[in-house]
Structure formats: structure tokens, C-alpha cells
Length: 209
Image 1 (cartoon, rainbow, N blue to C red):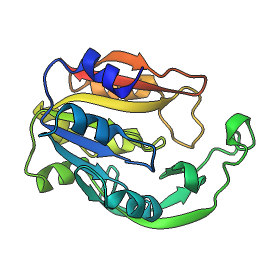
Image 2: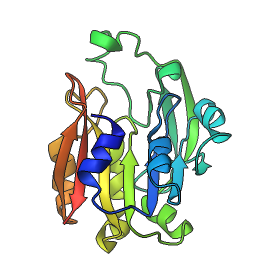
Image 3: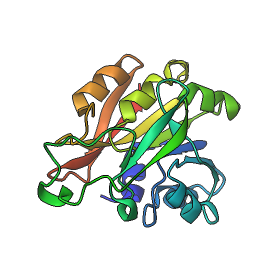
């Protein structure tokens, strides 16, 4: 299922804002798909990895910030394991998975200190946007990022959440889909769709209400 097909299935009404957390390198094109479908919507992207930020900044179809999301404002180490593939994470690789299947090349090639803000801080800085589609692909740090957005989640202004979920977590502290559902269920979200289901990853969409 493509991103466009997912939107037709899940987003019955038009989102006004896309929060694209973990923009990633080309060919990641979620923001472009949203922009094509709804040209007037506001698009905000976060990409902390300096190499990817420089690659995407010029042609990104919205405002792009070189920040990461975490549960508290802080400086953290971004571990870059496969720079050309965009597999950088705030979490440390689980040694049990290094050397297995497609992750035999998942070895630390660099580390960067990045600025982390909370989702609530970002929300305030953006002026409390409405009808938000939250898209996060941040390599296992999704739950920590969501914990920093309790006020936003309680507000009801986030209508949809798309997260890449690891079927077989490969990083220390990486949440399962059940962990994410337990947390989001406190704010009235439930799973409405799973797509791009593979052996190791899938995309899951939660919807408010």
C-alpha cells in the first residue's frame, strides 16, 4: 500500500498540518505526497542528522528544522549506523541483531550530538496547529517522543498518527506496537490500519476517536 492509498483509506477529512518527524533521506517522500494531495496544508519536518538535513533542506515542501524529539528537552547522541540509508537513531543498537539478516552492516559509523525538544515545545512554537497528521519514523524512539507530547495528545488536535513499528525490535528500549497502543489508548487513539507489513517492519496508523 502506498502513502497515497493509506491517506485515502484513513484520512476522511483533510489534515491542516503534517508533523513529519524523522524526514529521512531521499527517496523518503511522505511530505511530498501530502503536499501533492493537499497543496495548502502546512508541513513541518524535523531531521536531526546533519547530512540528511543538508540533503533535504533546499527542496523540502515545508519548513524543516534540525531538531530531534525526546521526552524532555536535552542534548542526546544520535547514533548513525547506515548513513546512506538514513538508519540513525537516538537508541543504541541491540547487539543481538547486529550481523543478522539485512542488518549485518548495522555498525556505528558516526555519532552526533543533537538538540532535542519535546513535542509540546514544538507544538507551542508552531502556534498550536489544528487537525494534525503526525508522521514519525525515528528508528525506535517513537514512544519517548510521544511521552513529550502529552499536552498535545490530550488536546485532541492530533487526528492521525502513522508510526513505523519494528516487528522484531533491534534497538535497546525500542517499543512494540502493543507498547505504543497502550500509551496512545490513554488519549483516545486506536489502530485503524496496518500496511507495508514485512518480516521486520510495518507501518501502523492510529486514529483519534
